[in-house]
Image (cartoon, rainbow, N blue to C red; front, side, top):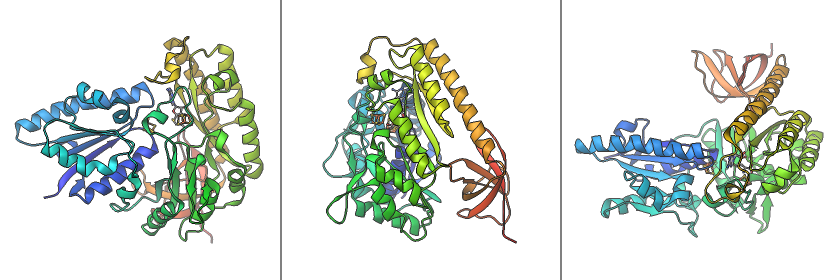
Amino acid sequence: MRRKLFIKTYGCQMNVYDSERMAALLARHGFERSDRLETADLVILNTCHIREKAAEKVYSELGRLARLKQRRKARGEEMTIAVAGCVAQAEGALMLERARCVDIVVGPQSYHRLPELLARRARERGAVLDTDFPAESKFDELGVEGGAPGVSAFLTVQEGCDKFCTFCVVPYTRGAEMSRPVAEVMREARLLVERGAKELVLLGQNVNAYHGMGPDGREWNLARLLYALAEIPGLVRLRYTTSHPSDMDEELIRAHGELAPLMPYLHLPIQSGSDRVLAAMNRRYRAADYLRLVEALRRVRPDLALSSDFIVGFPGEEEEDFQATLALVREVGFAQAYAFKYSPRPGTPAAAMRRQLPEEVKSRRLQELQALLEEQTRSFHAAQVGRLLPVLFERPGRHPGQLVGRSPYMQAVHVCDRELRIGDLATVEITGYHPHSLAGRVVRPH
Ligand code: SAH
Ligand code: SF4
Ligand code: F3S
């Protein structure tokens, strides 16, 4: 009998990728994916630890799950609860104490052991825990079978991080930086494209630090990998995320000018515009380095749309540091960006720094920065009106006959057109815009 699997995913795209891989692996062990929590035999929460709010959400969800598990037990039904991802890795055994309903805690590098952990849970009394960083790689076991990929598919090529920014949990939850070998990435990419993907989004916590072993016995950088991927017949678009400014090498910058499938959009987190704060964050670059990088990128690709991440209210951030961030934002001009209030994370150096800022200061700065970023997004969107843009259509829209695709610059584009199909790449005249999307109509040659 096939058992039912429900997965809820929090956090970054790498978790989305991992959830798909776990589902594919468990499909081989008799689990069928379901979107109904109430009847699931196995529930996996794939969690995120990046900010306090993200981690707290997991515990409130576990509270709800505990009650559901009780009710089902009373009816003689069994429900296994597994917690995966970065909260699992960070909390480990502590999680089993804080949430008694949890049966399995599995860290991000041990997913391939899930079938074995499930068997152990069924055999033994008490919960099971696996937060190792095993020598064998989860990628060897996880497989890519399962449901067909979307028009745009994620492909994790790099994982972990050695940068140790003082605010960040990722080096602790995902472990040391590692790159998948080129041949393995190419094999998975070809398979995804054969099965219908038109766009590949290469993923890594630090994707531009990629240095995978090539078939020639040498390490390849991300630029070289992108050139090889661009040769795959049927692949029309390439993107990659997330990049660290210090790892943008010359070849990668050049690729943005030369490589047609590489889309003119780059998420390049800066975090702050103040050198003093950047140093305290251990970001290893100054604001001027970032500006020079942007200039170099725009020289090869003048229409490049930039996105970024910002943290406001880092310990010791003065008003003038914050003003430096606003000034940098004005100077660069972002197509879109994310801003967060600094959230102290247990075990990170910044959490122990003196001069943690009061909540009101963080909130006010966040509001001010977000208002500026929204204004920039609005003017970026407004500037697209009247332009003809190639749009790759990915999914149905909310209204009948509507499809949603992406512009080269990453904005969602809504179009109503009866002849249009998911997977089509069409030329669209942009006719209007909203805060988070563009609207347009397909332009067909006469
Ligand atoms: N590897 C990427 C980012 C990974 S985390 C990089 O180097 O930029 C995604 C974003 O979450 C970060 O860019 C940062 O802006 C935010 N973030 C990470 N830790 C945080 C914390 N403790 N408080 C608030 N925001 C945080
Ligand atoms: Fe975290 Fe990114 Fe810094 Fe790595 S480079 S520690 S993932 S913010
Ligand atoms: Fe969150 Fe872990 Fe990703 S902390 S952002 S799920 S790497």
